[in-house]
Structure formats: structure tokens, C-alpha cells
Length: 228
Ligand SMILES: NC(=O)c1ccc[n+]([C@@H]2O[C@H](COP(=O)([O-])OP(=O)(O)OC[C@H]3O[C@@H](n4cnc5c(N)ncnc54)[C@H](OP(=O)(O)O)[C@@H]3O)[C@@H](O)[C@H]2O)c1
Image: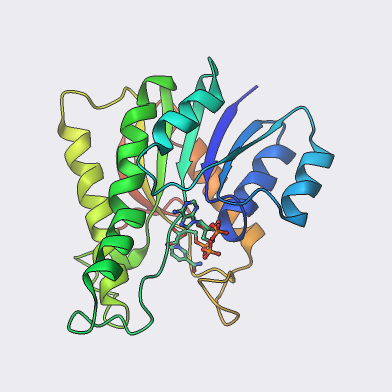
């Protein structure tokens, strides 16, 4: 049975991924800030043996230790670092406070990579560490004109991943940054192209395609490579 870690599984794409993996028969370790949600209770009821809820704010310094302790001896086939924020509504470099910038870059780039580095020795050889990025993180495609701060935080995530892929301590696993499509969630809004289930199904297939590949790729939910 596959063991999957998903961060930010309380709602949106993370919740959709948790559902998709549980329905495929995998065991899901879901990291959420608040475990008290009807959707999470339902998953626990439907999959009591296979659903492990881990309560943790990922921006707290002790997050890696808490999650490692909650996993016990359990190894992971796939870890999906999905939690993210959009940053300040104004998206303006000139207006942004130090606190807004620190929160955005910590949540979207530093905390997920730090957590992944702390958990990497639990990911099985040939497994996948996948990070929820965005096409707005592509410097080459330049698609973040309307959301420059958010785009910069995802570009930072992509850059940290590529640096890690070149380092001596890179795990013997695939390192992926993923674009989930434009998805109808609290972040994506109601006008977005895709429902959560379609994006999640595509992401699950995209991640599966990189098991055993030890690659470092920027892919969309339809397995198409994106320019860095
Ligand atoms: N939706 C899109 O169109 C789209 C497009 C490109 C990329 N993405 C990326 O896909 C990922 C998921 O997006 P989404 O649309 O599902 O967003 P969402 O509906 O806003 O959900 C965000 C998730 O991240 C969690 N989270 C944020 N900060 C956290 C923290 N410090 N500790 C623990 N959990 C935290 C939230 O938990 P709480 O419930 O506790 O707040 C929530 O579960 C994000 O990384 C986003 O940037 C989304």
C-alpha cells in the first residue's frame, strides 16, 4: 500500500488530493492546521484505517519535528507539499509590509522546502517529493503580472527545488514542482477553469508518472513540462 503525505489538506486542492489517494486505496497522512472540519470528519469516517490526521501549522519552527513524530516509523512513497497562500490582496511591492512578505515567502517557499529536507530520509528510494507551485512561478513564461508577489514566492520555491536537485544531499527521489491548473477553490475563485476533482486526478497521474524516475521537473497537471 502506498503511503502519501499531503500538507494543506483541509480544503481546496489538498483535500481533493487526499480524497483521490484514499479512493485509490492509499494511506494518507494529512497535515492540517485545524482538524475540526466536516470534510475531514467524513474522510475519517469513510477511511478509518487509512486516514491519519496530523495537526500542525507549517510555519511554526517545530513543524518538521511534529510531523516526523506523528509519522512514527512510517516511510512515505509520495510527499505533496501543497499548502500555500496568495499573499496580500494588493500584490504591490511598494505597499507590502515586512510581515506580509515574510509570511508569503515563508509559507510558499522556505517552510515547504525545509520540511521536505527534514523528511527526505523517510521517502522511499524512487519516490516523489512534489511541491504545489504555479505557472505564475515561471520566470520564463512571465504570467504573474497581475500577482507579482505571489509569482515571486513560487519562483523562489522553484529555485530552491532546482538548487536542492544539484546538492549532495538530494534525495534519491523525484523532485517536482507542479502547476495544478486554474482551479475553483478559495484561492482560485469561482471563475476558474477546473473543478478540484479534475485537477487532483491529473496531479495524481502526473506524480505517478515520475515514480522511479529521480527527475527534477516543473510539470502541469496534464504532465506537460513548463519552462522554469
Ligand atoms: N487554485 C488555483 O487555481 C491554484 C493555481 C496554482 C497554484 N495553486 C497552489 O495550489 C496550492 C493549493 O491551493 P488551493 O487553491 O487549494 O488553496 P486554498 O483553497 O486557499 O487552500 C490552501 C491550503 O493551504 C493551507 N495552509 C496555508 N498556510 C498554512 C500553514 N501555515 N500551515 C498549514 N496549512 C496551511 C490551508 O489551511 P487552512 O484551511 O488552515 O487555512 C489550506 O488547506 C497552493 O500552494 C496554491 O498556491 C493553486
